[in-house]
Length: 278
Ligand code: PDD
Image 1 (tube, rainbow, N blue to C red):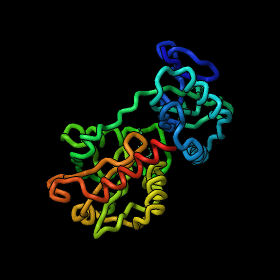
Image 2 (image 1 turned 30 degrees about the horizontal axis):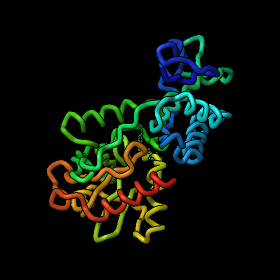
Image 3 (image 1 turned 90 degrees about the vertical axis):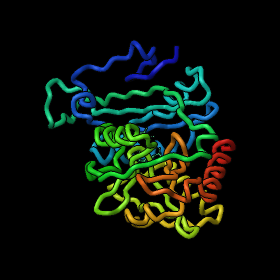
């Protein structure tokens, strides 16, 4: 059976336990990363560890050393070739339930492997539906926090309405999706919301911007209004799980006559080629 890593030991998942006084359990006090592994090779590890360090720093936690070594051991111990590493760091176990954290506790460090839920090429070609909702989450969505209740409710709203994703609007502007970043196309120019405290700096978002520039596709990071989404020629969502997820309907608005657009398909192909060859 595949092993997980918990606080210094590798052990079977069913044996890994966390005390009830863990601040991650009690307060959602911690951060995480989801790192793809393709054919036993970690994808964009440096970028994920850099974001993790930033998330830790933003919640006043120290960087955790030696994660790259733990990751390579975990990959060796895993029987699968392509999967995800879920990396979770909570502030640790404290003797009493207190909002005020102790400076003297050790973080809880958990790494485990999860199946890779990639969409088939057929599904990508057909496209997906999305819905729009107010972004009612907190104002620090740039931290990859394990406190995901807002995202959980918003993602389930999508799923219970037959949609892949909920696109989030704050003050009339698009922030991101409940589990993804969002790109739109208008008149052959690609737009994505500029980075701020209101959205996660997606590793895939960063990769796509780099690949778009290299392929001479014009991409602009800017404010995107709700009306821009509704009137877009093409829309797609990006995340480590699926680099490009084409959206062909947003609530009652049909995008590109309900067909996946040419630019979206081109970017999907560019991303897939990069993943296959990295
Ligand atoms: N989430 N925005 C949010 C709110 C996300 O949860 C994610 C990814 C992204 C995309 O980030 P990246 O490209 O680095 O995966 C943007 C992962 C998949 C998750 O929580 O499972």
